[in-house]
Image (cartoon, rainbow, N blue to C red; front, top):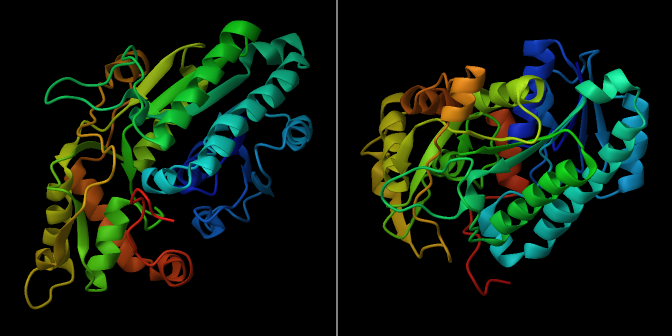
Length: 351
């Protein structure tokens, strides 16, 4: 299968590219603008593979996207290009609107033109996968889980722009017949994650003896999904998912944020022991504005229809992730030194 992946230098996108090329034998064109969170070092393992190619381009450039589609002739487009950090969306929403909304519009239009020009047999098999997030649903109470039928209720500029992108993709399917499939995922973690996100931030701050920030009391609950499990789900959706349907992908690993931080400290105490526990570095800070209290995904649909299951438990996935960061300083140290050193982001009123 020939797949055009947008945002393939990001965290989830790079895991997907590695899996498609190395695990599935697919031919991949990775299209990425290389913003601060895009990192070609995450693709070192496949950089020289004959079945992999990279193009630096902005998905908002419709004409460029049309040209790349016409040249590469993919069987599927998997749209992962997005600004993704909630904290940054609070103080810089414009980039999120430009990439997540207008960029998705551009990709849909480019893909629609390409798809309409395909021969009938290729039109029949072409797919456009729009990759989204559980955050479009807003916040849950103490019980229940997000289902594909849960109404959208986004809380942040990030989730609002992802919700808009989902609605555009659905509209292009209904209005133009574009063969769209939508996916939504819970919080991803694993190797190669940019260090602004909770788990790598805590790992690296702990190693450097810096405070481990916990927003508010840390009682917010997230459902954690190992990134390689997510990549496998996306490949399954683009090959076997039903056109026009949405599938939620979750790890069934709900944890309070403060418990995630404590668990990381416990693992580090064992793997990199020092005098005293890393948990003394835990620092409660002012909560994020509009912080959703709880996310949880009901993944029954993809599990029953397509047979997908998350393979990593939270404990096994965290162990793998921490060991990876311990063994791969070559990847994260340049980021900590030149791009993001662990400072607080996303305070309302912050310039």
